Length: 264
Image (cartoon, rainbow, N blue to C red; front, side, top):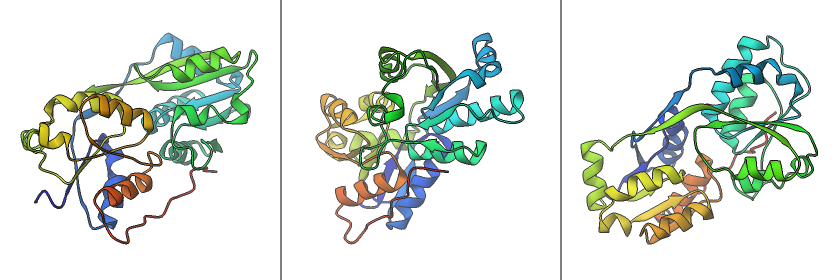
């Protein structure tokens, strides 16, 4: 496969598949770099307490598809029938779709056109005034504190549960060579952790190849790491990322369809 046709993507595991399919629809050969593994964490007493008291939460915010998987698995053990009280929220469309499929719930997502970000989710009317309301935030280890801190500042009683860890992996030997020589058409990254992880492997040629990111925050980080040809997608959905690849690579007439992110 030549540089002219290779687009590198970094989403872990099965999360790479929809993006690979979207790129294939453009006639682009996507290659998934297996540089991150998601691992569910053993259940803790804090988690058990949250599951037993799940009906007391007014809002449940889920930050990723894998967090949705872990949440659904836990609720299946503790709640054969879901309580009606909690409202569900997701940072992105893929997470919303997963929650709706696994739990059958309506999921609130960021307003159209604002991107799949925590900042956009926080603009929703239901999350603006939270005086003493209980909020469950379901995420992985680490990550940005913005959601928890902002919700607490708005008066919420926030419980943050880390249900999984992200483990960064070194690129495979052929990927090390591609990154060192910039031997690809574009690189797609939607995680600050992965961006910082891969930057040391990127040679000067790679720093001058198109880099597609999913938010202005990541674009700023990429600029600080030395990347020069930055393209910010309108969100982190496969359609939005594929559209950004089409623009970065000058693919004439490629306009992927954008799915409605509000599921259920």
